[in-house]
Image (cartoon, rainbow, N blue to C red; front, top):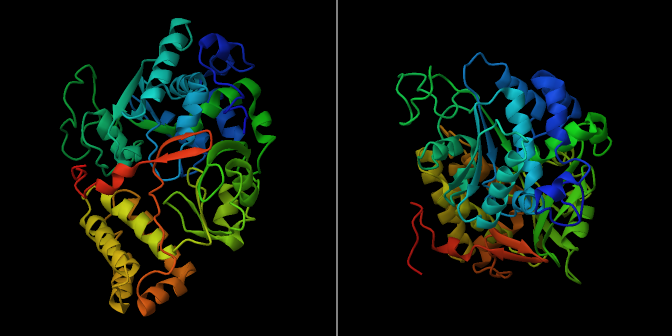
Length: 461
C-alpha cells in the first residue's frame, strides 16, 4: 500500500526527493515560521509519536525547547527491534530524505547543537541510505548547519529504549539510565555527583542537563509533509485524537506479511486484510498482538478503529503499529512462553525483579507448555506478575506483566487444559516474530534468537 510516507516508488536520489511536492519545502517553511512558529504548526497538526507512546509531538518539542539550558540535542530513534515491527526500515528504504529533512526541522525548532540518528549495525541497507541522504541534502545547502551523526548500535531490544539509546551514543552498552532524556540528555553531567557520564566532550563550555529530544523515524518523516502542506492538511485524515496516517506492519498467520500506510481510524480487521492479505482459507483469527507492549486482542476486538483511542477502548494499545496475527490453530500458552522468553532474555538485569521475575515466569510457562506443569506453576506466574515491575527503570517489565497477564485472562481454559491434560493438543512451532527482513510478502525472522542467552551472548551454532 502506498501513501506519502511510503510512495509508489523508492526515492533514491535528492533530485527525486526535490521533484516531489514536498522535498525541501518543509525546511524552507520552518525557516519562514521560525522555531516557535514551527513548533506551533506541529502542535496544531496533532501529530503523535509513532514509536509507541503516542505523546503529542509538538508538546514534546516545546518542552525541550523551553528549558533554560545552553545545549540541547536531537536523537532520531531508528533501532526498531520489537517483534512484528518493520515500519521504520520500510520508511528509510522508501525515502530516507524525508526522515533527514524532518530531523533538520526538529533540530532547528528546538535549537539543537547536534543531531543523531540511531540504527542497528545490522541495518546496513538503511544506514547506507540515510548516510547518502544526509550528505546529498547538506551538499545542496539544505540543513547544512545541522551536524547529523549516524550511530550504528547493537542488536539488543533495549537499544530502542530512549534512555538506553543515549548510553549507546555515549559509547556505552544499552542499559537504561534513570532519568528521561529531557531531564538528563546526551553528554550530561550527573545531577547528583557532578561528574561527566562520558569522556571526550570537553568542547562543551558549561556541562549541564543537555535536554534531548528523542523522536521515532516515522514521527520525523511526517514533519516535512506537515510543514510543507500545513496542519489542516494533516488533520484532514485520521481521527480528531489520532490524525494522519500510520505505517502498519502485519505478520504472522496471514497470506502475505507486509508493511502498508493506512488512515488512522480504519478498523483493525480491514488493516489486517489490506496490509497482510487476510488469513489462509478456512482459518479464523484467534489473537492479535501489537508488538509485545500491549494486551492481547481476541477476535471480538477486531472491529476497533486503528487509533490510539480506539485500541485503548478495547483494552489494548497501538504500540508501533506492528501487528502479529495468530489463527485458530495456535496454542496461546506457547505464545505466552514465546513472548515471556523474548522479554526475559532482553532484560538487561539492572533491575533484579525484572530479570529474575521474567525468567521465572518463562520457566513456569515452559513447564506448562511441555506438559509437565501443574497448579503451582500458575501460582508462581501470578506471584511474579505482581512483583516483576518493582523498581523498574524502563518499560520492559511492564510489558512482561501486561502481555502475560492479558493472555492468562483472555484464554484461561487453555492454561487449565495444559494443567489437566498435559502435552499441548495444538502444539506447533512458532517463530519469534523478530524481523530481519520483510520483502514481497515474505517475512524473514531471526532464528538465531533461540541461541541467545540471558547475558546477551549466544550458544555456539
